[in-house]
Length: 275
Image (cartoon, rainbow, N blue to C red; front, side):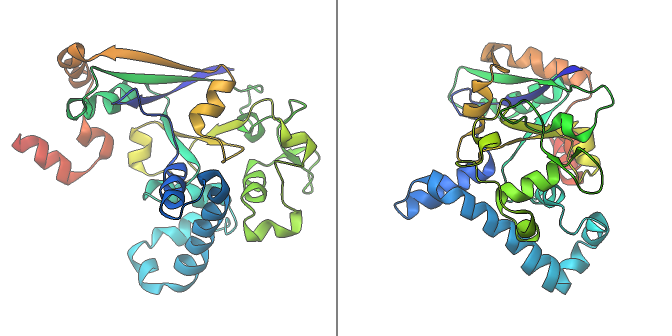
């Protein structure tokens, strides 16, 4: 089954970079380092801080975000679920936001365009293929050098498990007994045929649902998303002339797509009414 994911950008000159990559670049610059050398350690540090400091110790934090215990119930070591929560609240992760709705992507591209100096904005289209029409988990996972998604025999033969795969790549502590996946030495994953994966957010609230959100993640976090997706010839960029902004805003308005409908934010709704 073939389908597309979309991402809108107000400045087409900006590369598609995850929040983790941007964080690592800033950190590396401040410390006179190369960002590719520090990004894996930074990722693991944030993930472990989130689970060890916030989830384990901060009672006030749990009171404020009482739903987190429920969201992680039965998934205490779920790397993707924790990353989904961190991504939603602005934490640096390897996840990059996409949407399955091209009009939502168009909104995000046009929304901040007038504050940019560029004469145009852009929408990216990523071609995704699910090999299995039953939409099993492994179909959304990256494919190794043999073209197979990550498999782990965990009581079930040839069970797909993208979550364990992410945990072993990040070297997240709960997966230490599985052994880490070293992208420089592991033969199967040294040159993956499809070096990125995608899925719906494991933590999905009404806002993400309204935005038809998806997350795309790289296998090798030391490469930028745009670098990885462009290698696969599955990423296209469509430039949109800035003179069309009024027509586009009218089109989006006619479809009920605006900042309050996508963010479901009362503050933004009242601000829109005032304008």
